[in-house]
Length: 404
Image 1 (tube, rainbow, N blue to C red):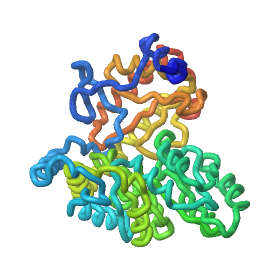
Image 2 (cartoon, rainbow, N blue to C red; image 1 turned 60 degrees about the vertical axis):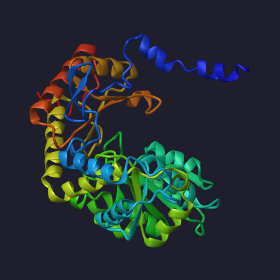
Image 3 (tube, one colour; image 1 turned 180 degrees about the horizontal axis):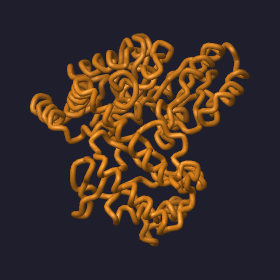
């Protein structure tokens, strides 16, 4: 047997080095539902690392809907949507999503990652351009890698850089600007009004990934385009169900012709098994709750504002966040791991974001809010983070806001 593959794999030592220090923070086994408090190793831990922004993953109506779907349809579809895997339930959800984001049609994918792989690998051609924000999600990057189109990146949320780069592209080429609605690590919102103006000037189209925007911004949580009242100017809206919508899967929404094209060209749709009936029913139930209980989104923002206020008072550097994603910058990989481990031992779950996911000088704790968090839980978490910063000598603080 040739040893070259084993040699290549043996060169990866990053994880083992962190494990040797006792600081490995990944694949932590949770022994309970995804709630504001979880059980890890038999102990209570405050969960501030979840994307369940509306706190719906344990909602009894959603669990009941999933059980009823299993009773009626079974546990899976045993095939792709293209062939034998389309249920009337899939079509019901597609129609519901199209109405929710105010587009003509929608198509479901098995995961949010597969949405961007499928759409971006086929939507443009060899002589066309995909134009990305440099902080777009990995699924957007990977979808573009599968495309034959040319890929252009511009500096994060920098409209002047976007303008410089799009202005020199061939007028006759298709130009698709692809952006996150809310950026998953930084927590800031895309500058959609400026992008729309640039797209109109240079004959470009726009696709927004609303993975972190659904249930968070826009009318009834319907996303970024709704938030800016620019839905008609956005060609494609994509999203995932694994966050506010408490399930698994994803969708793309647009006009009838574009969605019909994707149904027959997106390989991650045609060659993947379809969403199981329980997950489809869960999303439908989540949409029912979101539309019937708008106070959930209001509470999410109350929690966000409260946590933001407390953290700024402590002097934490939160960057430019505008959402329930609060990036607490530490700007040192090792200190980020140390703080994460300390907080875990103190009963607070946060996610460390270090290089190569970000530059070492941009390493951070990703702290995310749910509508179901209490102010007391937020206070406990902020107190313990502040304590950990003092313990490990974290000096990256925003002195402008620190309380005197």
